[in-house]
Image (spheres, rainbow, N blue to C red):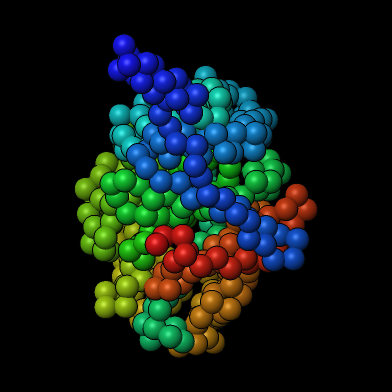
Length: 374
C-alpha cells in the first residue's frame, strides 16, 4: 500500500510539472540604450529543452508565429498559405534531424501552440527567397588572429518578427552546447555558433521564378542546428554539408575559430544545376562571385564593391568594431538582424531592427557566450 501511495504521488508530481519536464529555466536580458535581447538557457533532451523553452516563451512565441504566418499569407495567400506550407513540411520532414522534431513537439506541449502552426511557420523560410551578406576573416587579416564573421539577414521588417528577439543557449544532454540567434518561437537557425567555435551563416540565392522548389533534401535552417549539435571541428561541419542531400540555392559560410585550426569555407549550394556544390577557401581565384580574393578572408555581400573597398582599407586591422562597420556598410534597407561573431573568443554582437529602423541602424549588443556555455 505504501509503495502505491508513493507511486501515485510521483505520478501526480510528474503531471503537475508537465509530464516529467523540469520547469527550471534561466533567462536574462542584455541591453544597450533602448535595444535589448533576451538570453534563454535550456538544457536536457531535445524534448525537455523544447518543452521548457515553449513554456517560458509561449505568449511571445505565439505572437511571433502569428505575425510570420499573417505576413506570409498577405504576400501570397496560396503559395504561402497554411495548406501549402504544411504540404511542404510533410515533403521535407523525412530529411529533418529527429532532435529538431522532438524539440518542436516539446515546444508545442510547453507553449500550448498548435503543432501545425509551428510547422507552418518554420516552413516559410524553406519556400521563400531572400538575400543576405556574409564575411569571414581570420589570421593575418584580423588585428588579433581571431576568426570574425558577420551575418546580415536582409529580410523585411514589416512583419514585426523582431519584436521579441532571443538568443537561445542549448545545453543538450548529448551534443555540443550552442547558441541560436532567433526570434521567440523559432527553433530553426539562420545563424549560430557552438561551444567549439564553429560558426554558421548563409545567403539566399534561390529566385522566386524557380518556385515551387524541390524539397527532397535538407534545408539549411534545420541542418544548421544539426551542425551546431554535432560539429567539434571544421571538417565535421564539412562532412555534414557535403554528405547531405541539399535543396535550393544558398551560400553557406562555415568557420572554425579555434586558433590552432581556424579557417573558413564558403559553399555555393546549387542543387537545380548539374554541379550542385561549389566550395571556396581563401585566395581561391576560381571564386568569380566576388571582385577580389584575399588571404584569410571569404565573403559575399549585397554590396560587394563596398565590402572590397572596406577590406582593402582595413586588412590586417579587422576586429569587432571594424566588422560592425562592415556589417552596417553592406546592409540594405530591409535588414532584419545583424550578427558579428568573434568565434575564437566566443563573443557576439547582435543588432535587431525595430518597426521603423533596420538592424544596421541599431545598437550591436555585446554578449559573452562563455558564461552561458560553461
